[in-house]
Length: 205
Ligand code: SF4
Ligand code: SF4
Image 1: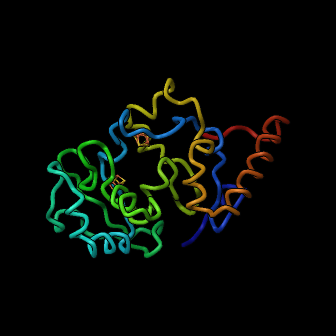
Image 2: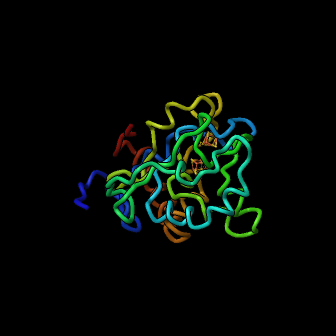
Image 3: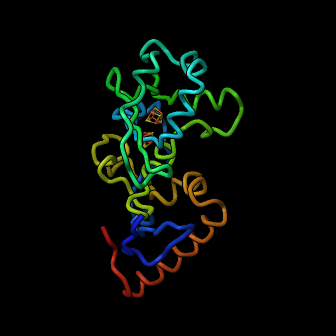
């Protein structure tokens, strides 16, 4: 992919948008409060992730409730080219009953629920962009998915945002960059705020 250098710092091949240090966010996700509204619109998965989900369709169907569609042919949209995905092909999940086909009626992701019930890594089956939200990889940079966040009613409300994306999303950042990448990011954050306090840079976004 042709990369345009927009940010000074790059970790593990991704530019870092410093907005992740300052953008306000909830202290933690709680589907009992927000009903998982970030999943109401579906998500773009990498084709290999969609294939992995379809390969275990019987298990997925067994974990679904009566608000979800159990026909695997109705789970995904047609594939499309997208360079922000490892395989270069993105596949959107379908929306059914006003929510992603994999969201149950309580507000839990069936794919995460399955992994937790199996006692394996909680994000083993969950698509990458679901795991990392409100972070996103856009044109080679780790940044905030503002477009999606701005249409949410709970976690985008200032009164529900006592934290920042960086502070709340440690596990998500480690998932993307690894422990060593997270450490490097935390160090960069210190440098960033030092320069900010010295008036050497301005807050972007
Ligand atoms: S990102 Fe927002 S809507 Fe999604 S689970 Fe977290 S708090 Fe809820
Ligand atoms: S796959 Fe799971 S986490 Fe992703 S949008 Fe659908 S329900 Fe939400």
